[in-house]
Length: 358
Ligand SMILES: Cc1cc2nc3c(=O)[nH]c(=O)nc-3n(C[C@H](O)[C@H](O)[C@H](O)COP(=O)(O)OP(=O)(O)OC[C@H]3O[C@@H](n4cnc5c(N)ncnc54)[C@H](O)[C@@H]3O)c2cc1C
View 1 (cartoon, rainbow, N blue to C red):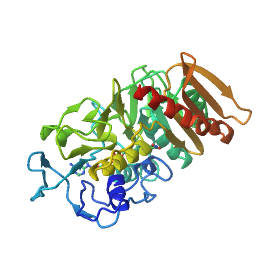
View 2 (view 1 turned 90 degrees about the vertical axis):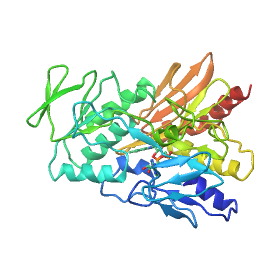
View 3 (view 1 turned 45 degrees about the vertical axis):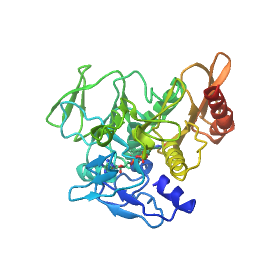
View 4 (view 1 turned 120 degrees about the vertical axis):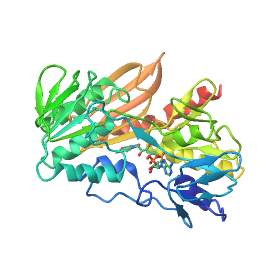
């Protein structure tokens, strides 16, 4: 949608058709794991003068057409792939709920009924946000994480620890270094031999880029997504890919998008490319997460030497450096701590981009 909106903002008056697999108009996904899950109405994403089509089932990169269940649409001058990510399912737990779409959030709400006890598997950003949101409603939640700490892939340990302490204060039962092994009549047996009560299991164990449509069309894809250059062009002329489904190949690195701001920037960059401009795209690594009343923000890399500051109000910030250079800044819980991220943001992103240009 960011691509369509940017095209219109830049004065593009041609036809734009939006192929949509969901039964509702496009909306902002971050709200799905925050607030009243499955009850709050997500913020709509809009652009002027779009024509809506059903889900795309196939594309022809030579004819530049898109096939739906009932017809072939096109030819188009440009096709932009923005298929997002698909959830990883929990092996052996076929009735576990996942959370990627509004329909998923509504399904979870229905499964909760008035009094469900929930086990969330995976203490990544989405599992943590969901645990906080449900516990705020008084839903009994157990969070089961195979790794040694929460949000391990994206934030430094001090931020994980602070978030976990807050989660436990909110009565969420957080278990690390264990996994589900089986379900026996309303109880889940964990790999460490303990059992937890649960009526609903939510799998929040990760996602992978949804490259199916692209792959079937012969567009180059890798494990990390549809391969694009820094102007979002895929491997055929007139075919572009943006957002969570794409992986940007830079000099000797790849950039994989998994956050809202980066997806928006990529969509806008593709729009400029389609209009014949050279977009000045730069990787956007800024992330945020709202876990109940607690906010986490971060920018840059989480791996490196950590300089931790704990604030008297309970907040915490972490500066990450490598070879004496600041490469990441993360914070949780208080305005003072969060300000350090906003302060470091342009320094970290500009430096990363300068290095990229070398
Ligand atoms: C629950 C949740 C919470 C999140 N919270 C945050 C957050 O706090 N902060 C943050 O920065 N990011 C967050 N994100 C990530 C952010 O929402 C994504 O990075 C962003 O939505 C990616 O945009 P996208 O357009 O690439 O993909 P999506 O928003 O996933 O949109 C892709 C769309 O393509 C559709 N589609 C797939 N295949 C087809 C097809 N063949 N035909 C037609 N349509 C198709 C899908 O149904 C989907 O609607 C969250 C994501 C989720 C799911």
